[in-house]
Length: 130
Image (cartoon, rainbow, N blue to C red):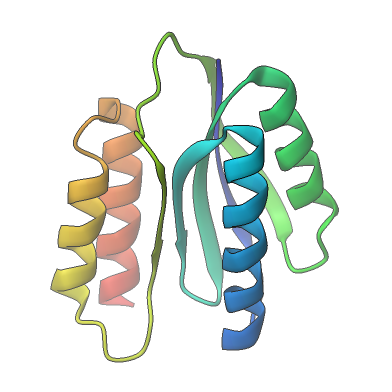
């Protein structure tokens, strides 16, 4: 299986993020892709994992999506087992306390590699401070 972790920038309205979440959940379920997405309207941090060809197609769609700018791959590796049991997305919404968001992300990252866990937890803490 292939795992890709990337970060991108994009100014998205709440309805754009809602559409991304809806379409991504359907596509990822269909393609046996799991992972985690953190989106706060300005930044996306995501891990995609699953069959190599499916992950490559999903990542190509992301790269072609005009809502994503400056897409940077943070890691790309072959994995023996999924680190995320099901498709999970964390999304920072108005009114969601930062500590609750960090707790949600930590729960989803319990089985992730130390590198993936540190990247997401660090990102969430930085975004909370911003």
